[in-house]
Figure 1: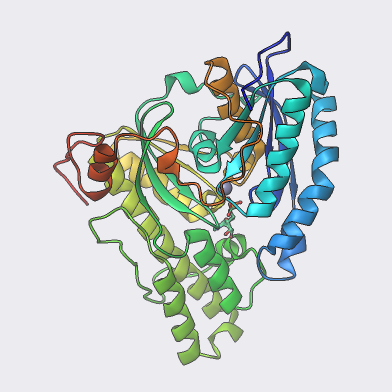
Figure 2: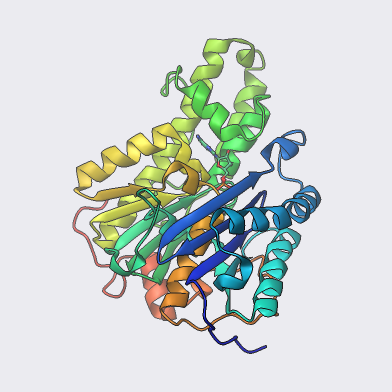
Length: 380
Ligand code: KG4
Ligand code: ZN
């Protein structure tokens, strides 16, 4: 189906995000967020200790229509005045993506507006640039930077030499960092999602009380692997079955596991920034809510002489505002729209979005080189 022509409208983009367990709708005009609504399903999935895809789909179906209506009403922008419609097209849970994508495509078709299918991680990349009151982001003027995306499903390091140009430097080979927090919490009998609970308990514990592995930290690649750390916690608990009954030991255990995860994330981010010779680091995704990670990234950026931009609280975890910011930018720059009947892409790789030449991407991932990333004298 061809992209629809622009007609008289308010210059406002509406975006929908339903890739996992947050139903979210936002409206953005000229880089400014008019409204951003998030309906979280965390309490529903908590009972099962993790996201149940069928429940997520049902909740998106239930929550999305009223959320779209409320968002348009709050922004004082009736659907007929919208200029563009967007949705997360992938990656994510197939049926959850389907709800948001087909709703957005239906709206775009009925209103004869362009539709943009957005990559969830590309939206995360730029969420760290949203700030101010009202919150806004200008994607035209970004410095070259390295971005850490760290959530329950993904751990990625990405080089962004210029806006809309990205090179994936490394990603997780197995569990994501947030998944490691969540699975560790489950082993400790703590509620889901485990990250914030471990963060809280760790605050009163000793990070060096127990020595947990730092998987792939000293490996030259920028890939991650956290499943070994989770297994180490499992064996540790098998050998110390009574430890979690002692509140002080539980706090020490949480602090020690958190320190291991944060150490790996920060070490790899610093290595990526050095390799790519950038003066700016950004981070986004639910795990960026972790206080130790925020502190350690700030200290590391300081040592490197880099600017650090951490996504602000509401834009760390999944939200449609970051999707709308990117779609609004694409629409204003005349980027080609996505087909109104395009299907969800649950396994969409960020490298396949406006791809760099394969040679550039390969050299960036494997080792520093002249294309994409430059060599750096002091490697960590
Ligand atoms: O980005 P997000 O909201 O959803 C996706 O996974 O896409 O991230 C959720 C993840 C969960 O694994 C949760 O435990 C983790 O982020 N998380 C945290 C903290 N807050 C959320 N992990 C560590 N410390 C936190 N304060
Ligand atoms: Zn996300």
